[in-house]
Amino acid sequence: MRPRRVVIVGYGMAGARLAEQVRARDPEGGRVALTVVGAEPWPAYNRVLLSGVLAGTMTAADIALHDPAWARGNRVRLRLGARAVRLDRAARTVRLADGASIGYDALVLATGSRPWLPPVEGLADDRGEPAEGVATLRDLDDCLRIVDQARPGVPVAVLGGGVLGVETALGLARRGAGVTLIHPADHLMERHLDRTAGMILAALCRAAGVRAVTGRAAVRYYPGEGVKLEDGAFVPAAVTVVTAGVRPETGLAADAGLAVDAGIVVDDRLRTADPLIHAIGDCARAGRAPQGLVQPAWEQAAVLADLLTGADGTARYRAGPVVTRLRAGDVDLTAFGETHLEADLTALGETHLESDSPRAEVLSYVDPARGTYAKLALADDRVIGAIVLGLPDAAATLTQLHDTGGPAPGDRPALLFGRALPQAVADDPARLPDSATVCRCNSVTKADLVRAARSVGGDLGALMGATRAATGCGDCLRTVRRLAERLEDDSGNTTEGTGT
Image (cartoon, rainbow, N blue to C red; front, side, top):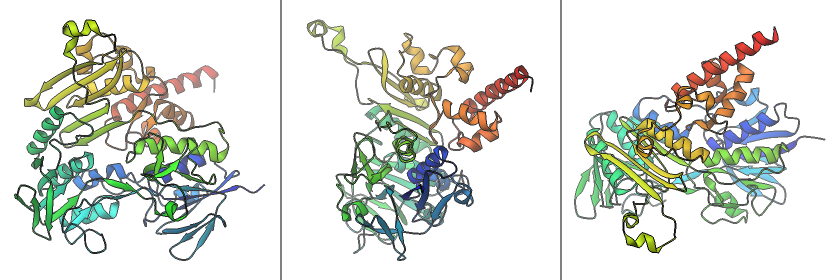
């Protein structure tokens, strides 16, 4: 039997991860003949780390996911700089902009998302594209263009105070640009942070040279001059960068008659209404999975690879917990789960005695002068949410407890300060459960590192190359190094014991 022809449209993080996962399960290509179509002219890269390139702490080479020889070495037919323009479901073909047509037995849409321009007068031209002097930050081209324009001393306005907006503002300030961050909500990152954390984050931005303007929306853009706010204030800017969110790229699916509702609608097998067509990543609406984050996309890629290769026909996608992280300059922020709960003080009065309804336990610590904040929510003695700013040990501890679902230690103050994990686990990462995520930038679990060690040994460089752990923000480098040392020791002990 000939291999099944699988075509992936999109060579971003989701498409690249799926290709890797398929080849991990079918390395010789006996079951799947894999074609990947990418609109950009270069191999896949880690889009999450574009802010590092923007800040000058990373290069384009640093964030590459694949080298130019990856496709050939992994039996992948790769088309770069090729844009898919039409799906023919009856003929089972994908038409490209250059007129080429690719047949498929199974098709995966990993088309990602596109930047959204808010309805600010003058921000878009007659075609709906960014006006002169306006930039969006979605791909490497955007990043390099902004770096070229936002030189030291140049006034820059950043519209949108979510994760990407804050990272962008801090990165450009690090390069010496005069940055104003404009956000219509009353505090930064309001989807992920409560007001206290948002206010402390704004103070940290100001300390890094970013002027943060919140609670006021931009209403008009003047090309090359700046932005007018709703209260009449004017923000001078030679360059305006829009980071106001994204919209799923669903045009191919919609034109082909597939269901689209805030994304391409898929079931728990990542299938559209046409069972031969799947969707993953930002373009997909997969149950309650959040869009715009890499972690769900890579979880979806693992499930779909199992199904496409036949490695596990029972695999199903279930959205897991997602952690939001921001690492830029001196800002170290982690948030996940229920972040907007507040302490219920009625438990101190008679009202509590009249109700049997369970209450979340909410604890917090704040030190505005040092830019630190920790807020923890628990239910049934399990961590259900947290905001941790400037306390990396606490972030690591709480994230680990959240990921594993284990009971929280009774020492609540220790939880807030990152001293609650058993000392044996803190000292020896090998004691972590296999499901524990060690590297969040690249979604690498302890089990992934153990499997890689069996193939390449416990050498740190080899493990990093095989899994990409610790090649992102670097927060996990200490854990990966200690785990590598332990795995290398175990490998040596095993070798001695077998007499080989």
